Image (cartoon, rainbow, N blue to C red; front, top):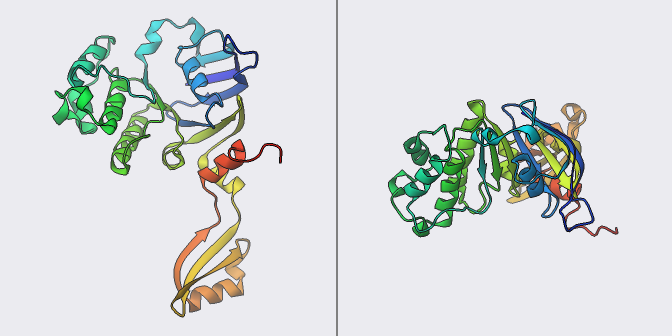
Length: 286
């Protein structure tokens, strides 16, 4: 869907490049996560991909066509949900929707969309009366109004409670199942883990890692098995090496004779990988 080759970008007043020659591809029907600390170049990259910033170096193609040569019809095919919900607060939700619908040739079924995010009943309320979570959900509706084939989501679940976040994640998965492609940035690693086929880590304008969450967890994880068991009324823990643990007598003894509570493989979390890859929170001089 997208091919980015040696992308470089410098803001007019800066001497140093914000994006330092990154390359990646987003396959059709893929949910692609773009992760990195604040100021790493995530938003800049997204703004370039959606043609809000030009003056970049490198080549970006969308569906095989150079985006620099695409006209405004490009915007008919993409949906964008910015991190900060932007609506006309002195208008109702429906008035907002109808305003944005007029910008597009192709219009989605609004009732269906609003019902899917639980806002249909509140469609005639002023947006100023909406809670933050309702505004975020309305933001998602707006991104879907033109039935896009590609979605750009910036921190889509930030500020949503777990139930509403799950609704949104299910909608993103359903969009993918219908053949849609998604570019997503988020600081909420569990969302990325649940949604993304592949993730890229960008640090100080350079891509440091790009792979599936599963492969990254295997790469950065430990090959161990941790067993928690009850003994004399308290919980005890033993850790075993994963290699040949089917022949490990101590392990087999333990699971046959003890009251097992949990068994975990030593795979790491995306949070831990994020900190390792980006060096965030660590002293760079160590």
